[in-house]
Length: 170
Image (cartoon, rainbow, N blue to C red; front, side, top):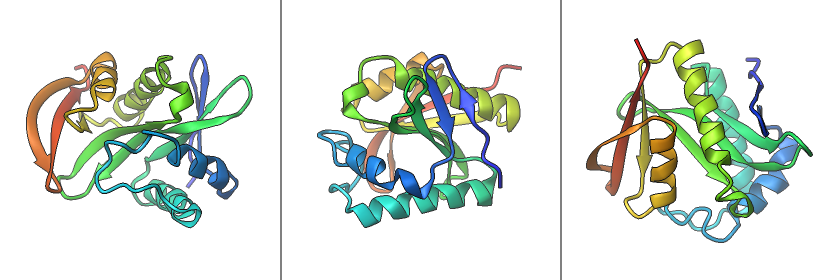
C-alpha cells in the first residue's frame, strides 16, 4: 500500500522506513516519553524496529495507520502520529508520541488535527477516540485542542484511562 504523505505548516507526516530505526529508538528512549504507556519499559533497538514493522503492517491491513512525524525544515524525525484500530473495541484511535525535546510547541496538536482531518475527510470515519492515562494532562489538552471531548473515565486492558471522543461534522 502507498502510504500518503501529509504536510502541515511545520511537519511532514510520512511513512516510516527501516532507516528510521535508530532515530525512533532514540525518541522512545527519551526521558518521560513512554511514562504513561502501559507496561512500557524502554524498548530495545530491535523492539523499536519491530514497532516500525507493525506500524507499516497496520497500514496494509486497514488502509490507515501511524505516520512518522518529521520537521519540514530539516527532515528530523520527532515522533509518530496517526490513526490506529483498537481491535478489541473496533474503534479508531488518534495516537501520538513526540520526542521530549519538542514538547510544548503545539506540534502534537498540529499533527493530531491533520490526522483527524484524514480520518474524517479521506476515510469517512464518523467517530475517532483518544485514550489517555488520567495523569497525562498534556495529552488530554492536545485531545481537547483537536476537538475531542472527554466522555468517561474507564478501563482499557486493565488500565484506568480517560476516554475522549470526536465526531465528524455532519
